[in-house]
Length: 80
Length: 200
Image (cartoon, rainbow over all chains, first blue to last red; front, side, top):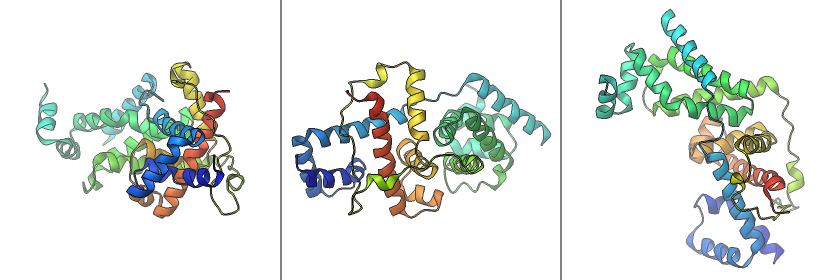
């Protein structure tokens, strides 16, 4: 594992995940990820991290919170 | 199918907004039904507190209802209420002011490049190996360990899917600052989750 290459690879992580790398740099980076298990793990688990937070099942709206919201809105609407 | 739903299908969300502006409460309620889950999730992600998230949810829709006439419809209704919700969530955070700061300087080398302290891979399908409540708590703790300005950027960019430009406008930041914060936030969250989900 080349530390210099790994540092540079990780510093492109966000640009890579956001699809903002030019074709040549993307190819170079993917070649590195293909060889370096450590960087591959960082990229892969960062993507998983984002997916976990995007999961719509997390932080579901509790029924009682929803009921209080609609009650507050109805009271507000009646005053208007 | 009710008249409102039929009109909405034919004319899209702008019909609901027009109806709500004209005083049709059912139309406003339909808009609330569409977005209440997402606004609650926004509140949970940014404030990390169920109580604050409920306040964010209520205050957002109450303000939207009270100021609907002022909504100029030059953006989507959802974009408009996200803006309100982010402001409400940030006010909650300002009142608390207790979030610990991340010692980010320790994660940089002398050239200002970000250092990764942990290259661990994770167990396969970590979310399936834990109870939902346990997983929620882990995610909540991790995002709460980020400074508010970083977790708000992470939430808007990665969860809400706003562009860097939209996020920058919403938070009054430069695009460069949004990108830098997002990068730091992603790596930080990954490392926090690795402590629990990593092979080890």
